[in-house]
Image (cartoon, rainbow, N blue to C red; front, top):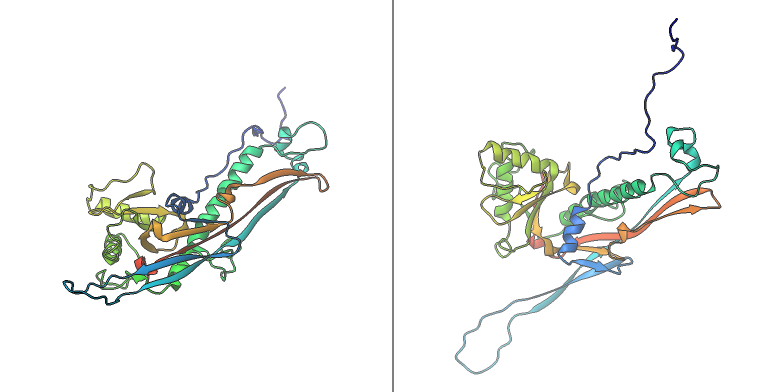
Length: 317
């Protein structure tokens, strides 16, 4: 005699104690702005970046008298924050018919969810990731649920007067360009560098931003060109110093898929919020009247630049 197991499905171990979550990138740009000290706190709707400029007109000396010359001007740019909330309702009873039932406590009433820490960590990372994209690609007219909460840097820089456009023959041979390839990416970054205004090119916080996809194209092109004198930071798709300069090139998730490059000072970036690090705060609680576990997060965020004439952009034709 032999076992007859034809009526049984093949066994697959479903480990209820193990839950693996996918990787989610964080809000790198927001952290860079915070590190530069340009966070505007207590912004409920909008707040101005107040800018003062003055000139200094040299006159011939060696004589008495006073002749007024020169001017001091005040201008403003506005940071408008988006009001954002993230709500999710979870019913632990939905897990009773699945392998996750083993993670539920005994009894029929539940006031918490299993794997709450893993859920909270993943949710916080997802919020940070989506904010990173919105900081660059946000557009209140986009109709995209996650990008329509506030205008991002791409839109704001694109609408500002005085921004220097690097996609021209003045800075890049053969420009304007309609695509980025391994054959022209080095000249594109060199052109962006060349377009940076002389008065800020040597600033310690001058930075070139691009997407992680374009960053890889660039580093591969440098490798293929035998430019082994550059040094990339320990983490892949991170940052390095533009060869032959002191300017840092930083790859950010927020510019992925855009084929856009921006050069500007970190001190030229401003972030508005109601409460510092408010986007990192949330609650997970049991709503007894609904018999649900709920996730609640609410925050405000917006960005802008102060000096458009110190910004360089590369955008495909």
